[in-house]
Length: 140
Image (cartoon, rainbow, N blue to C red; front, side, top):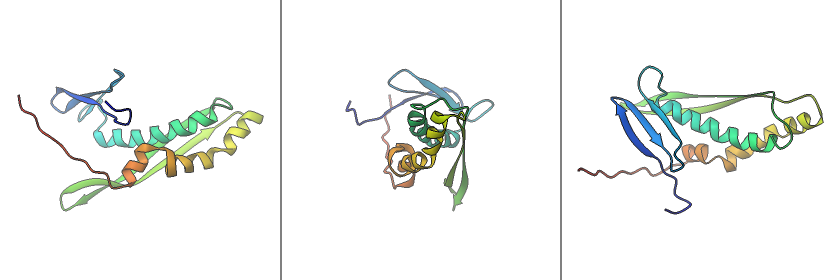
C-alpha cells in the first residue's frame, strides 16, 4: 500500500455499533446508541483533532498549555431528504503559562490556526473541497 493511501477497516460489533481499526492497530467504537459517538460527531472530532494537532505540535515546542480545549459545531442541513453538515466551526480555548515561553506560544496561536485551516489540516481541507467518494460491494 502506498504511503499516500490512508485506510481503516470497519467491523460491525452489533446493530448500529461498529469498530474502526487503523493499520497501526488503534481503534475506536462508534455508531448509534448509548455511549457511542455518531459518525457525524466523529467527523467533527476529526476536524477539531486535526487542527489541534497542528497547533499543539508547534506551541508545545515552547511550553505545555495550561488549557487546551477545542469545540466543534456544525449545522445539520436537510436537502430534499439528503442530509449533510455545513458551517463547521472550531472554537479554540487555549491558555499558556504567564512566562516568556508561554507568551511565545500564545503569540503564535492565530497564525497557527490559520495555517492549519488553509494548508495543513487534511481533514478540514477535505471537507471544504469537493471530494470523490465511491464504493464497491463484495458478497461471500
